[in-house]
Image (cartoon, rainbow over all chains, first blue to last red; front, side, top):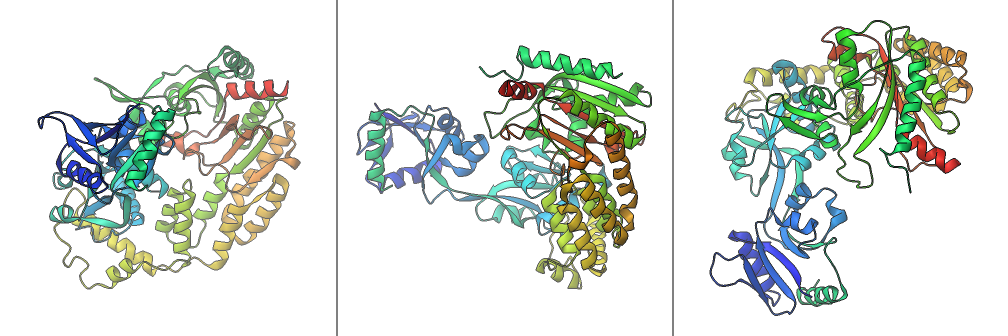
Length: 230
Length: 364
């Protein structure tokens, strides 16, 4: 019985993933030409490689169609409700690091913490007649974080890309977005709240708890974990 | 097999409860399952999206599958209701479950609401009616009164800004506590604020003004922060009184005597304590054993943020794993909000019939 391993299908995330497995004696590579989304794993028997968009891997793991998968820990937390019941972290891989943070305009000199954001949200709603808009594509993580910290009178507006630009365009007052160095945020006139770190993400090898795990699957996983030093 | 949340047993129980409420003169209200999302979002904030199903209509915009009946019933009353008025309703509500797959996403609710009338009498009538309808299940009641905490906050010897901030977070205990500790100087002013208030030009090197929130609004907040820094800390005595109210957990008569003591030092809660006295008298007159009735100063603070007076719940002591069978309370501020300035005192309670069935079967 083969176990299915899903890894990102392109870009640096794919290359770094290949390197990570390579350093542990397993060669991952795409099969045939570059357009194909099937791959091979050399150095162990019984592991099948599937190349997928990093954003699809959480869903495939949760549904049990992948046994193992490499994706960002932020994507798993955002896309899989009750993720810790359905997936388990096998290894944090030490690359693909990015922080999900709340950022506001640098001109808001009065705002440094969530406490300030909450106070500003109350005044903003009173002055403008609608709730302060926070643009994000990480709705669940942002909402849970703000609820836990008792921030009220805001609304989330969806932004699937170029989120740093929404404040300048006046379609939101603040953002909740991924950043690795904060450079893009600063260049767009934004600053990160000092207690506004929602999740520190990195590429992570996950194991699905919902996939079929027969004796044979488990034996293959044991062999793989030995190889990977887990 | 366990009776389901929508099964025939639950529906029969819902019919039985509705008949009780209608027998007391409640007028049945029928409300749509699809409710406009904007009203619910305005009221509950973004959190409601985690709990309610959102869908979209091409002409009406975002709609929600009703997460409860309170808003539609209040709106129906505001449009055409008399005073006082009694309403009953029964039907399914829908709740998204993001963490626990064992919780139902669709279940029945049966409710009884009174609009207008003398508040203590109406509170007692709703409590006694719900209690009576669930007789035999040997549920444990819990009660509280958010109005007492709100009166205490309004009576603090401090700025209106601080009172407003505390009142806004009465339903978020963690932030309420953080604010209270800051206003009482139990936690120091953060370094960022100290530096900001000491700066000759707070905008120095701040970068451009971006977005809808104007420089004028930032300046207004700076003025608020300066005024706040100049406001004297709440006294130890007042802090201790608020803590005493939050920590109350005793039988109603003992709580009442404790509150009377607190009211000597904090006269602002006098009216709310008189209201509690009247309510307990009215409950007693309706046969409720108030001497044994539990009361908690913090009860009801973590539920949806609209109860602003009497709050109650009924839970099975033998089935602590189940949610409360019934909950309710007074929500005068909600009617003011939805009535656009027109307010009607309102109190109500809601029962989950499938839980009543489960407990009754467990006892048989």
